[in-house]
Amino acid sequence: MNRRGSSVRGAAVVELCRAGLGLWHLGRAARGHDQAGLHGVLGVRQLVQAALVARTGSGNAHTLSAAVDAVHGVTMVPLALDPRRRGFALQQVWIATALTVAEVAVVGRGGRR
Image 1 (tube, one colour):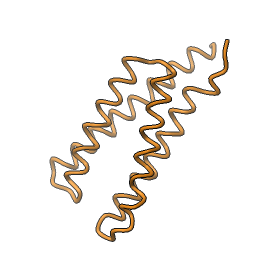
Image 2 (cartoon, helix red, strand yellow):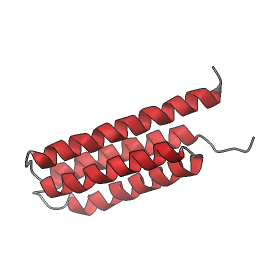
Image 3 (cartoon, rainbow, N blue to C red):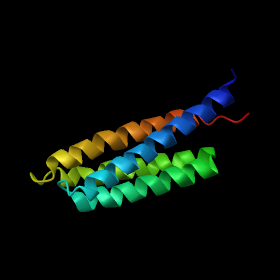
């Protein structure tokens, strides 16, 4: 198997996981879980992001997606200062970190060929 085929499959897995995460967020929002509004917004964002990145499939799309995830993780840090939202915020920091690492892994070093 060549590196390109492995990278394409890896990208598909990341975006499939992202779409599943989006559905999970929407399910939590629909059931009225704590932070339902935030879950709803994140669910829509994750589904749209998964669809756009999967459709585009370029290294630039994955790099931009990693940047969006990293920014999301950083924006959750101040939210963790609120005791009512701490659990949600820390969970989001871990999810954002995992997705950022996964997207960067898909892109690789980005060297010219």
